Image 1 (cartoon, one colour):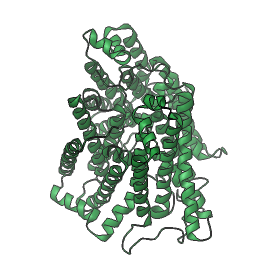
Image 2 (cartoon, rainbow over the protein chains, first blue to last red):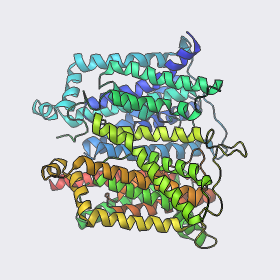
Image 3 (cartoon, chains in turn blue, cyan):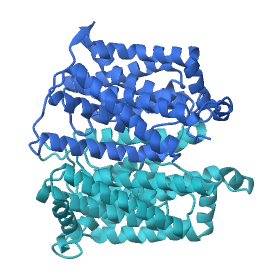
Image 4 (cartoon, each protein chain N blue to C red):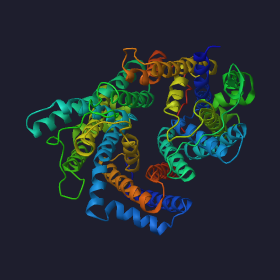
Length: 287
Length: 340
């Protein structure tokens, strides 16, 4: 496999994990605009764990655990607490960006030197197993949502919460569980960045990937399998940007390349015609 | 975004202040500093001297403007999360036209600020178009426009707008005659903060006490009812959205004119996002939002001094607004449920 495709896959994997988690949460009827913050928390946790002696796989696990807690915290405010999830998510990004920057400075001191961590070892095609596994997660979610009883309850929480309550289910419980799972996936996405693409942590290392993942969910019209082509497209655009940046002299303004993933996501949103396919109770409080 | 009773506001404010104080003390302890020393440095660095107060006021300009911009949009039911991008668009416009302007400083400044406000309003248009014509929620499109604006700034200061003198990723500096001078010596505060406060009062007046403001608020509170009594909902939303963008763009222009004198990368320390936090803390009332913005500006100025004096990381100034907003949102939701 050529270098370009390997890098495109490597860059698509964190997006795909985060977007799959977000899709799961949105199908349950809630929404986490602060996915960028959750990814940052995962990235920092993996970095901190690796710096304190954990191997890369243990660091990945530590990030997943931090993500579970982050998802539970979000649910406490936006699901059980019934505060507006969009507004909670906006504040969430501030807390996560500030919190990881604060913790990084405590960990690294004021030296400003780059602290490297050990990257995940390659498994096949020059890619680590975790990055490859990311491409199967949407399929697992598809099966879960369409073929299992808890999956159907989750879809009911997002489409018809009152019906779920009427049949004895708890919308708060389902959405909280979805938020916890989404937190873990988002954090894993962030961790994957630190443990593969750039084996160090810098403030804002996620560089807007959480926001791109939010757009991917709309582009996929809330269908898990459709996340894969979207993530590959954005991953490919980012890989192209890296390549052209290194090559230089294309005549196209540098700014356009930097903005390419964001522009692509914006066009994808426009092409998806907005909320077509959205869960009917998306963003509404639990009954 | 409903209006609250005075009693409820008081309870929410008390809970939020307690949470902010707890966060401040907890974070300083976590950083291994004495909370007393850290809070002393914070106070000294924000209001303790003429220079400190000047620093707070210099930082407040952008935050006050983005806070009233957010309030205006939120009250009309537009979730403009794109203030950061509109702020950057305004700064880009200022950096692009600033060095070209000649003539009387007053005219040059006016030209620069008009360009900034226009750029901010224009940066709203893709989101407004996608929302009106293709049903794309403005929350998502404005977030992506933030990313695109940040990427554009990063590219422009290394490309078309780069200062030909030197290799730094920054634009040419504004002429000294055009830049705003400090109001008093030994302080960084300029007339920009006076302009920001005047605009805050104006926006408050328009939103709270004019027929247009009533229409905007009606559209935000009950879109269907507003439409039923014949209000042009789409046009009112577009008006609030682009006015909000213009205010954020103006904030970016004033930042270049009064504080930095040029564009560089990364340019914004999150003014757009902190402005949203200020608006949420102020319940989207423009004046309360502006007051919250002043508080966050003091926190930002003070935390720089605190980091220097006590080693507590300055990122505290990003965490505390977030904690405040989360607490306020949770407390409001809880009180609303109790009443229902």
